[in-house]
Image 1 (cartoon, rainbow, N blue to C red):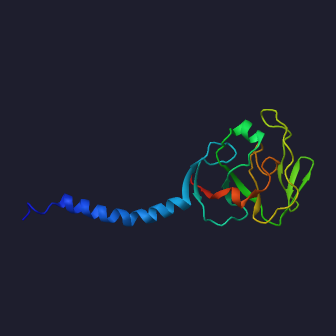
Image 2 (cartoon, rainbow, N blue to C red):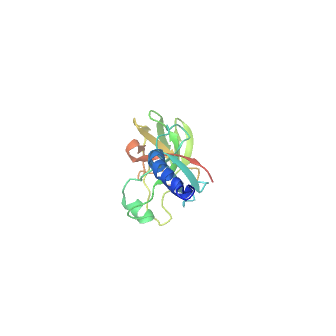
Image 3 (cartoon, one colour):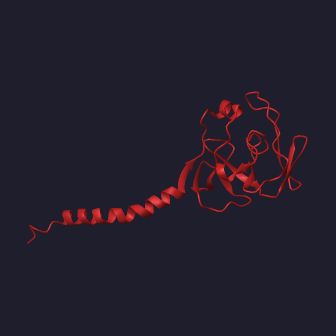
Amino acid sequence: MSRFFNWKRVGLLCGLVALPLAWAPIDAFSKSHALLINASPSLPNWAFWLDKTAPIERGSLIFFKPPASALVAEHFGEDPQMFGKKVIGLPGDVVSHEGMEVFVNGKQVATRLARTRLGITLTRGPDGSVPDNCFYVGTDHPRGFDSRYGEIGFVCRGQILGSGKAIL
């Protein structure tokens, strides 16, 4: 009898049956989550867990596709990797500038630079109310390339890939 009963075959058959059952949840999870590695000094952490379905709130860390521009291409290449920035302003918040200082709802959130490290002139970011489905984003890094500059501006839902949490 032991000659006909092979544990390896039983294990293989169980694995073949279980694989399709396990694949669907793993596939669904991978479509809404990702592990990201950060190469930029503008964020203090180097690894993030991205959740494409997480709600976006003030203070959330979001990852987005930067808008196409000559400046972005010059500094980050023709097909730049996604940017990760903190949400500082929500729809309806008011962004204003006084000289090189940037304010959201009257609170100073950043100081702009006149030029990039390559000497390219930077334009002032948007003023006024943050539009529906858009966000004002930034970092604490003094050279962060974010909404304080017109080349990034408000980041809207169509650009956003998800919200992340620092893991390392």
